[in-house]
Image 1 (cartoon, rainbow, N blue to C red):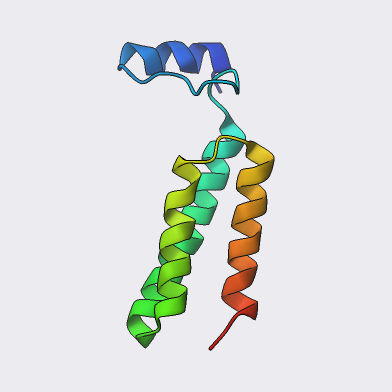
Image 2: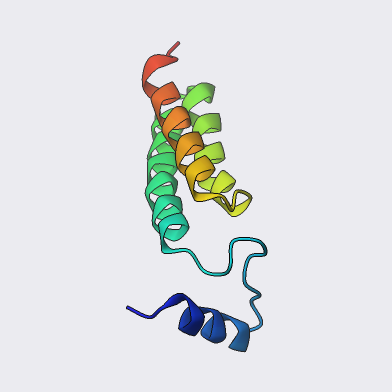
Length: 91
């Protein structure tokens, strides 16, 4: 597994800049984004199949928010809260 410096060099070679403030590439954010993106996609598909707007909206938010949150703790907290909302905030 490459270290953060190597990953930042590879990303910059393709014109992608490292996130500011965090010091570069963060594996925890990537893994969290993938996990919560899969949960969001599943919620969206469930809402679409059942014609229920609430899981569709929460699913879209779960898929999109990792692009805008750079703090790892905050990203996981938001993902856990939204995932819990799928189960506890039902129609």
